[in-house]
Length: 115
Image (cartoon, helix red, strand yellow):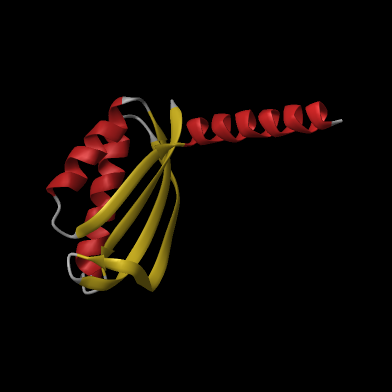
């Protein structure tokens, strides 16, 4: 099982009921993949840097979960069908950690080369 993080950008006029339904769908997909949902962080309305579907403000939700390799594909499929999602991003946390570790190693090597 791997760790993942899902970032969702939803319309700010989305009713709370629909938002809860969307999150419960994500939780069900994770549970089907024998995974566990960790932290769910919801940010209030924020201004967007540029309009998305003629919207200038949106709500952000971040979901951390773990599961097998089939879970991200199932979640992406479900999110693509939803009209309430303006944007989404699903990443594997280990990949981010590996890139950061590689970047630190390159910086360390560059510093050593300068000395």
